[in-house]
Amino acid sequence: MLYPTRAVDPGAYLHYNCLLRSEHVRRVYLDEWSHPRQTLTQRVIGVLLAEPQQAIGEAHTLLGKLRGGVTIDNTLTTTIVNLIETILVYKLPTLSREEIQVMLELTDTNLKQTRFSQEIFTEGRHKEGLLLILRLLQRRCGEIMSAAKERITRLSLPQQEALGEALLEFKGAAALEQWLATHARE
Image 1 (tube, rainbow, N blue to C red):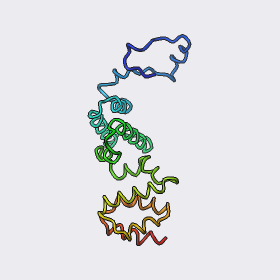
Image 2: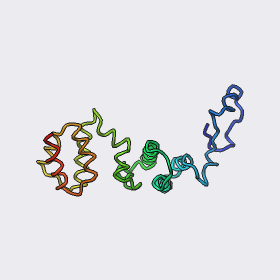
Image 3: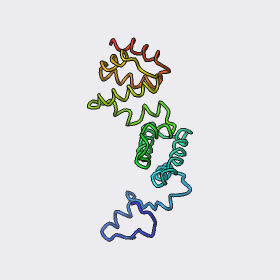
Image 4: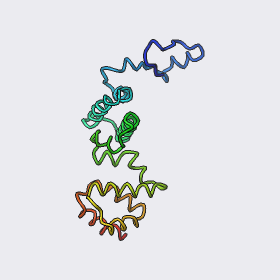
């Protein structure tokens, strides 16, 4: 049970006392979790509770801890990155998800693992995925020639997914041309 302070905790609930005393329920007072933030949970809640500009710093600190060797599994790390990203999307509504990812200094590997990136390439989002790939390619490789755009639009969904992952490592238009020469025929 989450309470902003102990003062608003009504105490014992006659009908729920047994449950409240069990190991399955814990009372959490958010003001007591404010500082110092030591656990991973406290740091995530810190991002959630912070003012928008302070949330950015809190997110950087948390992600720094994750990068710096806090030992947790990759699934949990991905979940936390997604959660932090989502919190900031709501706290900073004037920024795009991509701008937030840049602010958080998410690496190409982090971006590949986020739910957002994985969902972009699922069935039903074929068109959005294609448009995103073209925008990312333009940012990564510069202006894309119309012949290359045409070849990209003809790629199957699995080929587009492969291109979406590969483009994160492209250094220029030559890398795109090489990838298309190798994969667009399949």
